[in-house]
Length: 371
Image (cartoon, rainbow, N blue to C red; front, top):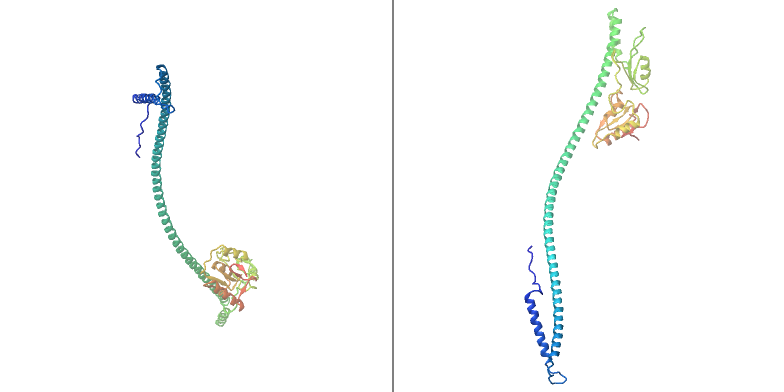
């Protein structure tokens, strides 16, 4: 902004031009005063006689003094006016300088504001770009998480299906081996006892051994021996589970109860556990079943298992629970269904037909809670 440095001319009473002007003004005033005294008086209408030289001198002196006082008064007024104008000029110059400073400051602030605005716009654009990238990554991670969840469910279903097949195969294999070994041992013992007899007695032994295969599948008591029996058995029944030392104890705990079983481990081997690894123990309580189900995520399309005959009956969302409740209790005691509603209808139909058999009598369990 250009600054106006022009100013009005100041009045200086000490300059020669001002002194000459004041002298001429004073002389003209004296002449006017003198001429005015020669004017005839309006009352007489006649000219006054000229005054004496002494009186004229006094009059001139008084007039000059009065005029000088007037001139001095006027000079003081002019000086005061000049000083006021100078002060006003200085004030205006100061205001103009202040305005110029404010204009410069505003220009500097405007430049700073423009710079900050540009910086903020750049940051905002960068943040928007990062936000878009993060949203894309979040969507990609959600899609990947869903895919991993689906694969996890598929793998879990395959694992449970494989465990179900292994359980059934283990059950059938062990039953077949026990029956085959038991029948073979009986046949060999009877053949060895009747080895010295005739062909007819051997034929009768063979016929009797064949007929013995059609008898009860329950394990028979071991042959009498004078030595003490140190064998151990693994049993599973409603009244007891685990290893026992004598056959009499094993038979007493298993024979009176349906679906109980007894197994003799190999010589020198520790007794095998009665149940596979599971979320629950052999005879889970209602609180244990409820805790296991409530603390595990169950998808809507998850298969459900129905236990028709076992330690406890009901419908359950996990094969491990059904396996814990039906381990070695015979075939056709549990079944898998595609949904919860189908499993519930199947269980209610079986109860109505009297096909549900529970070893530990109590209320059935749905979804982990008694109903």
